Image 1 (tube, rainbow, N blue to C red):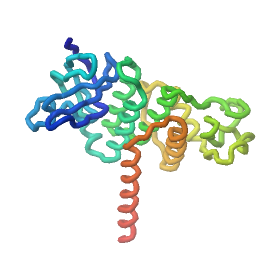
Image 2 (cartoon, rainbow, N blue to C red; image 1 turned 90 degrees about the vertical axis):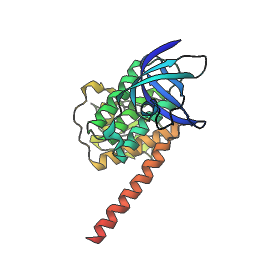
Image 3 (tube, rainbow, N blue to C red; image 1 turned 180 degrees about the horizontal axis):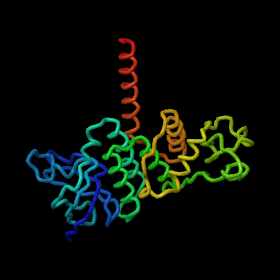
Image 4 (cartoon, rainbow, N blue to C red; image 1 turned 135 degrees about the vertical axis):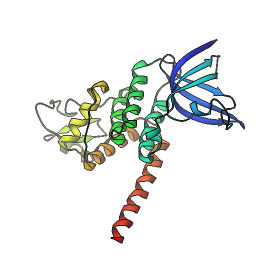
Length: 261
């Protein structure tokens, strides 16, 4: 049975000498795997639509297992994301986390739109790092371990009643000034970090405007989110390792340049 779907390529793996197995997040069917026969050949009409991040229209032959990709039409390759190594790394975190966090053939139009919108915002020049952290925050409930973002995890006071000053990975939520002593390993958080995490968790991406975040706040968000995922998700993201290596290289080049001046 042939069916046309809109999809985003989450993963592409070589299969044999000339074929590629791609994992698609589709609007109509959720996550599916399909074989693109001959896609590795330089003259293949499927080569351009089987690249990571590609958003396209796909005609697939459905089967009991893997389907077969019959045709593909490119809608957006997110060229500007591909042209920036850091943007590519953060986009990779989004698609890899999506792939590993959801089951196959479970339709989720909201998730499809979320991934698509974030990739589009990245391609238009929005801060890719901030968008990746926004996505990680929104995916936490999908993994089944929603944190306490609106109340202190210890005394249950609300954000309107007291100031949150730390985030406890162990307890899974914010701690207020009175309760920060309950977890000596909790991460200190700035007021900006608290506001952003609560915003990321609750707000509609359709309302996303320009968000300017300092490097220190980004570092704070990274510490909290990566630690939270390490503790609860059981998901290892290859993109994180590449990102860490990229940051080390970038810092080395900056320090080397500063020493020359």
